Image (cartoon, rainbow, N blue to C red; front, side, top):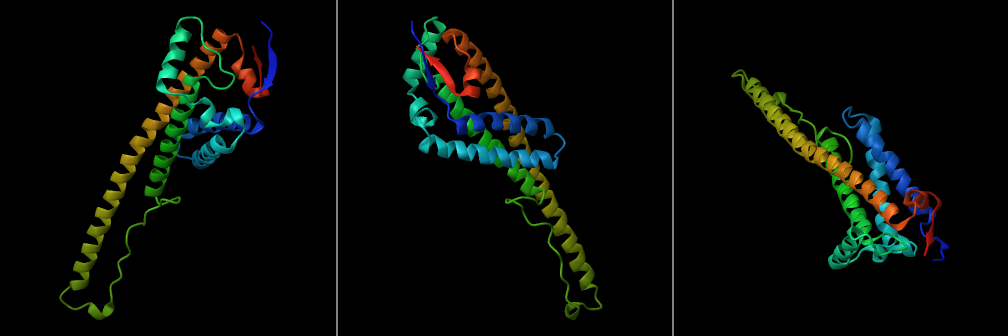
Length: 218
């Protein structure tokens, strides 16, 4: 069987892929520290995912979603051929790989959004909520009956309630954020396993192809 060398992955897709790998690793390693580096990595992931979604519609042939998103029936048929030892060949992403990309992008978007919610509950970022209210007591309304003290106590109670609500919101979003962070990590492991299986089944090095951009196509 003769083969020809085909340029499959354009430079921007390859740059996106390896940049996403690096920023995701940084985000996972710095997640427990709540460091500025973790926040920067999150913003970088958001930008990368946003780019990939746009590029999936306007990019070159093999970068477009229309090239690798197949029907569920076609995807099941491919998986059956893979398990049967005679996998169907696809120059770009195979059907299983295509849907894995969509899952990864969706999971990353949710992880980043919930991360922004956590960051916002702490008073930072574009989703930041207002801090505890500042009580303004007019001297003109203060009297000898101690009304100003009552107002002060009521203000402190409102602040405590507000702070409690913010803590609950932060914990809520943090739990979802952690879930999707680790869910994304699980998808990454499945993706890597799929790359290894597909590389052996088709007799090609998909990792090398994502570095060079070229594939030897039968």
